[in-house]
Amino acid sequence: MEKGAAFEIFIAPATGRNSVIRLIAGILLAVGIYIAFFFVMFTLAWLIDREAGIEWLGSALALSTTPAAMSALFATFLGMILGVFLTVRLVHRRGPRTLFGPNLRAFLKHFTIALVVGMILFGLYELFSLAFLDPVPRLSLATWLRWLPLGMLMLLIQVTAEELTFRGYLVQQLASRYASPLIWMLLPALLFGLAHYRQQEMGSNTWVFVLAATLIGLALTDLTRITGDLGAAIGLHFVSNFWAIMVISAERGLSGFALYMTPLPPSDTGLMRGLILMDVMVFLFAWLVLRRLLARGAQNTTG
Image 1 (cartoon, rainbow, N blue to C red):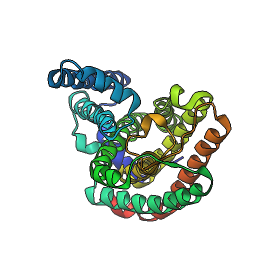
Image 2: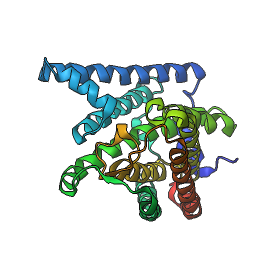
Image 3: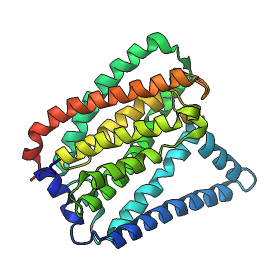
């Protein structure tokens, strides 16, 4: 698989300080900052309410079944963003802006196209799924609309943090050093998949879910390769999570922002597995559509 001119420009800032030692040091620093951010959040919770603050925050991060709890969970991804930003600055001596791509205008264009295409395709799929999923109301419409602006902002923070980490930092550092896509494409996707290991929510489908996330990671990396920025990856990732987290959630532990929920226990192996596979198929179809749309104009937006 050829990297392409747009992708070569995207990974160019990582060239020169892309040794394995620097990468390991960068990962350790980013993870350390991410963990430290949790301690900061728990300290703030203790200062706000010394009797119940830590207990509430711990429950919120573990369950995330209310809008406030989901906001707290997604706020932790600010630590992931901070960790990646400081890592590229301190370890690799380059600006955090280089993680997004070389051209802001192209980034916004690719983000918008992915957002529109994804909204249409996932919207049609969710309407179709209503016929057989029989979801139950999770939040009242008034409550959902009141929390919608904050929820979308926090969701954008979450997907941006993951894209900066897996399709930005890791892909750039690996692709600038290694030619084989088995390293710079597959390895970040595998790590992305393992980051979605959820035994409690998924039960016997845990590894099916991990595999699904890995395939999604590969598709998002391919969009990044074609466009030379993170715009399309962030846009499609945002749309996918918007429908799955804020509209119709199938996970009890991530239902705080959801308008509806499909109350499926982990023991319902067959139906849960079917939903995971259907979600992946819709995502991959959206990837194929975007691949054709974006590949044509990628060469014109690298300047």
